[in-house]
Length: 185
Image (cartoon, rainbow, N blue to C red; front, top):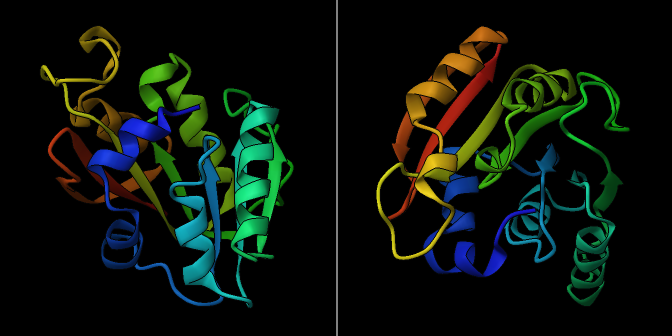
């Protein structure tokens, strides 16, 4: 769902996953709206290792096929693709309260059902689990979505708090993005 080529130019998934989200060996993680390049899915799978699992979730079957192909090439057997509409709470076929971390990377600007995205992430996460949200700054950039489609970090903070997350941190995720870490209470 996200523009993987543009993401690849401006975000460092390894640093964001390891240093900001603190993904560890043996964890379970859901990349919600993973896109076809597996730009965050594949590094997450390497971090969680053979004892962990990464769920690559997207509404586009072609994106899931892309992730599956890349995982096979890299011999990553700990990725499970899940076809789901994240705008429908309860639609994702992952057991409730199972993932340690979840990702919403460059996806919230694409929908007006963002409360549902956050509720679905929360439903899947363990108590104390962390959600990494990265999205476009609301300022002119050389590429990216139209400004009117972008959300401010304050709007995402309010939505997250409204569904029961606690904001742990807000940070610069790159020259064109901000990041938030939300914790499930």
